[in-house]
Image (cartoon, rainbow, N blue to C red; front, side, top):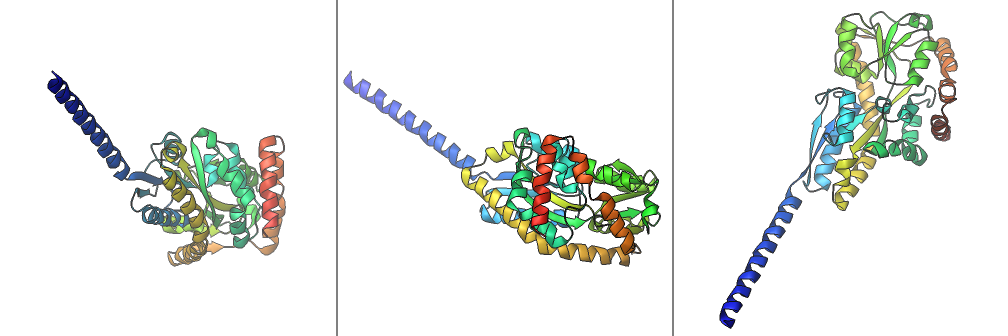
Amino acid sequence: MFATKGKAAVRRLIAALLISLAASAAAFATEDKPYVMKIALATLNDGLHQFAKSYAATLEKDSGGRIKVEVYPGSQLGSTQRQAEGVQFGAIQCIVVPPEFLVGIDERFELLAAPGLVNSTTNGQRMAADPAVKQVMLGLGADKGLHGVGLFMVAPSAVVAIKPIRHLDDFKGKKIRIFASQFQKEALQRLGATPKPMTLAEVLPALQDNVLDGAIAGTTVFATMHYQDAAKYVTEIGQPVIFGIVELSKKWYDGLPADLRDIVDRAASAESVRINSSVVDFNAKARQDWMSGGGEVISLPPEEQSAMINALASVGEDVSATKPELRAAYHIISDAARRTR
């Protein structure tokens, strides 16, 4: 009887060991399986795209291949709104985008679109790296599925147009695409234009069909996407400056092991600084490519450029005046902009 009981005990012990080994093997298999990060963006071959590619390479290297990154430029994963929703719910793990396009999640995402905040590329880069600015901007959306990890300057604004805009009066009556920002809307209205919020994928067809007279973006966008056939004139207005923000899916981020969370945070922060020199080169090359492709680059007369800056200087204060949260955040950003000049 004792022998029988002993044999049963041994069988139970062996069974328990087998179950333990199977569980351990499953755990190791799970750890070995790479975490997939899809990075979505609307642009192609510009500063945002360069950031995405560099970030992807750094993540795969620093994680030893435990994070596998796929980059989808040119709105391959849908419109910017669809991309943002995908990140919120975890279907897409990362979006690289001008923050204004996330204004539907939190209106403070439009803060950096206020004209006159920065007066040079260096000023913009320093402001984007300022701890107070990063704390505000990267903290937005944390309660709505986002985890901000990177912020950097992309380009000064320019206007591409079917007919040349050589003077301030040429803005009057024109239908011009803007980002999803009350700051940009107010600025264009002060210039006498009709602002039309629109995602990038919609812009070129709208110009070709004469639904728009012009569009605001960086010259890198116009050059790399070959806008010359639809609208050959680019006027460099410089304001507002365009920034890029890097948002991760909080659901995906929270599911990473602690060491990988640290890697994605550190890599984004480092790339946000490293991209600065590339952005300068991209913008200079895009300007040359635009002219080489048959486009014309226009500057407003100096006195009219100054008049435009003066006319738009109070947009940030005026738009945020009746919105306490927006106003408080705007003052943090504008103070940092002045401090970093």
